[in-house]
Length: 530
Image (cartoon, rainbow, N blue to C red; front, side):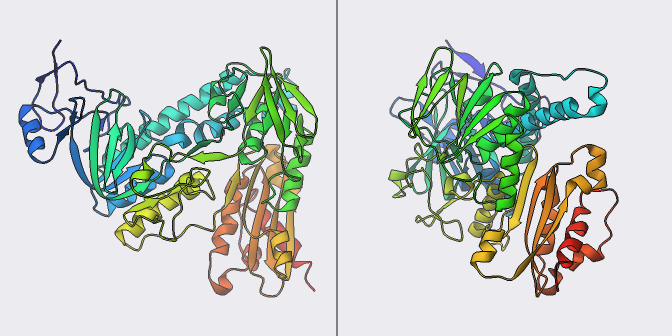
């Protein structure tokens, strides 16, 4: 059977194509952005264009399917935050850029499975908690409870809006987007295998690997079992469990513990360390642990799994200590693996570590001079905010336009309920380094804005040098912590005498605001000096 399709290279209306070659166009959002963007899985040309492309290097694969060849200055693998930042910066520097992503929509795991859905989910749960705990609402009605699938619907709306926005970014910056699995055939060539089997060949002067990461899955755990989930598949949960085991008390594990406990689920949070989020300031970590204990979250420290037993009506977690925990479902949140196993790294002499991550230098360049890496695929800090800056910096280093830096001083944002955010040194680090520091604190329960909003849990903690008054670290636990921390970050980034805790004393803050916690904490700290 033959049918008419449109040429993607020239404005010719239609031409006849054989049955074996089918177009696989991306479905655009309701308003198609303007621009020179090919959101195509297979580029099909009319006869004159095909003839011209063949003369310029197009080839035919062993199965007889035409393989078009496209030439670019830069090819970016992955459309998450790192890939987006890299593509935008390279395009703005005048480079001809292509983006390759295995998903049928841009945004990467951050938009579809990670940051966006989990934070949208958290926000919806936070609103439910606020309604159920606010005395004014309790006086007019009983607590309201929502199922996990119902709450998740809000996240789906946000995802679609994010995809539409990001699709527009590529259009406006003239970045060609290819949907398919990309792999290296050599240092300068990427083969993109589309869903329909058509292969596109991209030839580039330079390549940026920004393929992100996925949940680590031990081989001895059956993740196909209907009661066993990881942080990607948990979004397909079709009911609200009465009890949930979360194995892994890292950032993702703690965030989901807050979300499910907010829905009234009994949560068993299993931690293989002796302290929650040990990289945080110990006082902040203890505050989170105390908050969990008051909100249906049982934290079990220093435990490791022996095996996971899936049942028809639940799951049993066997621990090496001999304990057994039974629940309706298990959420595995213990580590992540870089998405490098399908990249054909062996064809370019590049090797990933045991976690699928690639090594880069301070310029984000790998051991292959023309290939760079950014985002989760290079490891620490595995944050969307840092990944975007890493991508921009990798592209900036690549084009040598001076718009790059090695990203190392990154604020931590942990979206538990309440939030946690910090930047700079914590007390343990300063004590170990023998730095003479002092502490200033502001407890939210005494802040007018917190009393008005009903968000009275939390504190702001400022660490500063006793002698120079330089701000060394800012740590916050409570509502809007991820916003509040950036005020301290701005002061810490000032050079010389401009970085001083006295800034918060000499600055007029709006009243009532959460930002004025800086003034309260600054006075508290300065009053400790003698």
